Image 1 (cartoon, one colour):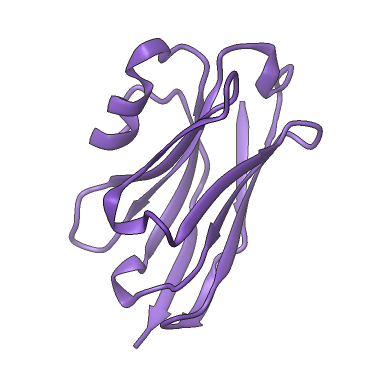
Image 2 (cartoon, one colour; image 1 turned 120 degrees about the horizontal axis):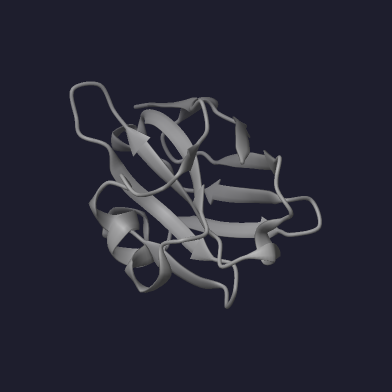
Length: 132
């Protein structure tokens, strides 16, 4: 699966951005038990899971710091996943990566929370910078 992110940029604190991740090279998110999500990594910090969605039932995960501000969604017809980010803060500044995997089964929330090493597909990343 190839993942291509877009939508990053520079925004003032309190502003909004919508990230998109278009997937290709596979039969579609509904062809298997796909989990799709977003990770981020800021300079000098460890990678962290931001949000994930399981396509089979729409179940979602959000890290605590983004709950109520970020929303993950997907358009299966377009094989695209989105991350709507509102009320952005300077601490949200990072490179954001799209991830996908069909084989995580019941461990998907754990993988989304602790670093995502088992996600098989990663995008190239898109920079999000929030100025204060």
